[in-house]
Length: 128
Image (cartoon, rainbow, N blue to C red; front, side):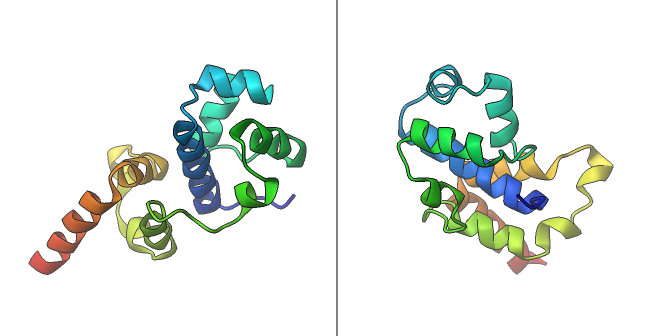
């Protein structure tokens, strides 16, 4: 498997988190069902790791989805704005590293309330 970009890992992690939460699974539940450690699952959801094919298959089974759907770049309606924001260079232009902020943390915040964050960003752009 090719090395995934940071944005791909972040989006994949958000997708896994959304699927896990939609299923009502805790990290421990998903760990037991997928035979992947809780710490590894946490790293995936934070966008720090991208699993290899065998682990992707186990993860898809545990999440009750197909392998193809899991690895697809197609995002849910709620995650689509996050994907668009990552594809633009907007977040890369912010000096996050100067403040010790990880891009994945910003994306996680955006993903948790994309409509609110979108309205906030639109307001900032109008004011500037």
